[in-house]
Image (cartoon, rainbow, N blue to C red):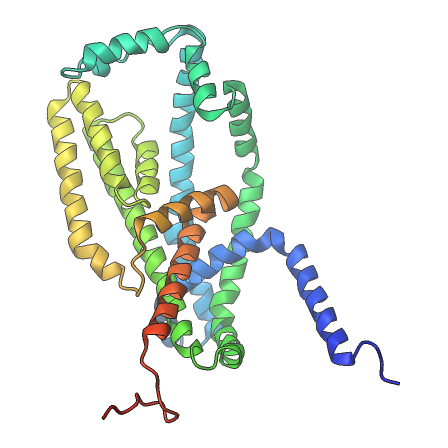
Length: 363
């Protein structure tokens, strides 16, 4: 009499249970692992050069690469976040006082040509009264100002959790560098078994897609945030670090950087600093032209040019599900989906081949 459940079926069921249990227990490490994989993919060509310089010693090369990532990426981001939070605290204090006593009309709004007086009257009637600002915030965000304040305080108190996430990401990144070649070879074996005809092309498209997306969205956004943040400081704009960080985040979305420096330029012009406003707008336009015409085509050399809508959905969905790391994880996942879609279309439109791998002869 044969058994009801065969041994291979039981083994597969147990394997699925073990995999599900592993995913369940390791789900809290998903964000640092994805961040480490993205940084590893983006910097892998440079890391391979480091391995050759270290004589093939992957442990030494991974250690040096990790130190470079900390010095070049982590430390500047931590410092920028520190100064941005300090400047945001000043704005938050002003917001609380303005809600308590009513927000006076800024002088630069009244100084705007043609629409200044109309906007000033609108400001007095809707924001000049006590508690009016809090009502507008509750109307637009659905949250009371006190609830937002408590959320801000809980975020600042959650810095220990962010530090642990950063630590786990760095540990994972070290092993991605150290054992990345062996992991890639194992994935190639499994991929060739699952997708024998498409794996070689697909396995080359994915790293190039991740590298191009991170390079295009990350490095250029950071560069524009730094350059325009320095320009804000030179022009005398209040809170230049906070506005520089905001401009860097806005630069992740197509059209975000020009919108940012245009609004800041209008603020300077309305404040009576005509030359500073025009100079900032001219500098931002020249910088944007140089980036779009020279740097972006060189840095973004991957096979996927992500359209606006997938980029926007990737940013919003990534931030909503994963926080700050989602700014990069979301667009990368969308880029992979676009790459898979285009690869599928390529395989469907590709002419059929004979058994020897050559296109069929016609005539």
